[in-house]
Each structure stands twice: as C-alpha cells, then as structure tokens.
Image 1 (cartoon, rainbow, N blue to C red):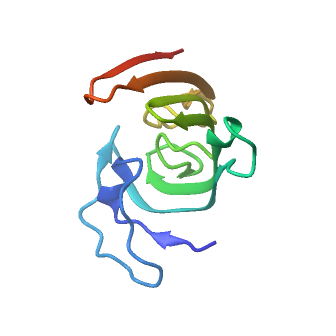
Image 2: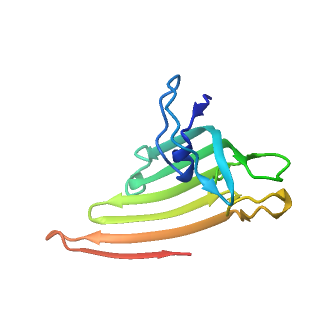
Length: 163
C-alpha cells in the first residue's frame, strides 16, 4: 500500500484523482470549514476485483457470471478546529470498507443481474471542537436487480428494481 499526498482542494471530493506515487502536488490555499482549515491528509488502501464467466458449465448455465469487488481504505486528514483536542479525522464521506457482488446472466437478447453493495460508516458532516458530536453516516447496503431483453430490431425492454 502506498500513501499519496492529497492537495487540500481534493479533500472535498470522494474519488478525486491523486498524484502518482512519489510525486507531490502543490497545495492550494486551505479550505475553510466551521472556522477551521483542512491541512494535509492521505488516503490509501487496497482494492481487489474478480470477474468470472461460468463458461465451464453446460448450456444454458454457461451464460452465468459473477463480479466481486472489495476495497479496504485508510484515510486521514488533519483539520484545524479551535478547541478540538485532536485534528486527525477520517477523510470526509469516505467509508473504510466497500464491497460489491453481482451475479449476472447473458444469452442472446436476454440480460439479467442481481447486485449487492455495502459501504461502511463514514463521516457525514463537518467537524466541531467536540469529537463526541461528530456525525457519521451509518453503514448502508443496497440490492438491485435488472432484467432486459433486446429484440432483433434493437428494441429493448427492461425492468429494474432496487431498495
């Protein structure tokens, strides 16, 4: 895992691009939040993905497949909030754990999938001087499904649902 320095301006967005390892970017003026300032921070982690078509199964099951993804993230930003005992906080709105799992089927014009997604807790608002009052978003899970059929004339009929 490599640590990458983040310019203060990039700390405002969840998936902002970062400088390649070993390169430091010049930091713009700090962002002000509740009378304090964002100083420096880091975001690091590991992401693993796997996609596998089940072509080894007999027809019609050979059209199934799976996609799985996991990201484990460590983030920290140093903030300057007067009266706060420790200025080290997690990157705003960044979950430490993110998981995705999808089962799909594609044959001819038929396409179907069921997907599950999980994001761990993350900071949900700005920080004040009392760390006990920091607001964190609860972990969230979603499930969605889609089935569609594309006809020979490229007309596509689909049905989608999610929680």
